[in-house]
Length: 201
Ligand SMILES: [Zn+2]
Image (cartoon, rainbow, N blue to C red; front, side, top):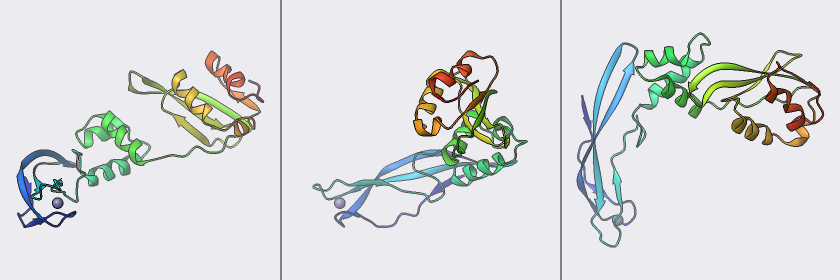
């Protein structure tokens, strides 16, 4: 299906001169709502100001999709909604919307910012196998031993990622952790001397 805007007279928002059409770019948009797949071709017109000393130009904009996006905002919203169900994995949702699990994860991370809970007195750490890509196989999970609350999930347990993550938590806050509970994985054990100076394993 082709979507284009009706041609109307265009005036420059900067100098109010007439603008001329400089041709059309075709953009292919995937619009998937459950079993219904709609393939849209957006005919996006480029406009240029006729005033030589101005030279302003712009593209037609469409309210249902961002300028350089391939997926409409509505679909991104639906992906985030499906992610609320803990039984759904990124792979399941990818199948629903016919996109890769990596794309699903990226949309989720783009819109959802899960803040870290305050650090507890007794901190548990472990990994979960997420396999987002080759650099992000194991995510680091931290938990409050006393309440069972999930403190945070870091996208990977690799040193580059965890070092950046823990170093960004103010020292004063890190010093409130008294105990660290983990398995025998050496990097975890070393968190006591690298980040949580007042804690014992
Ligand atoms: Zn102009």
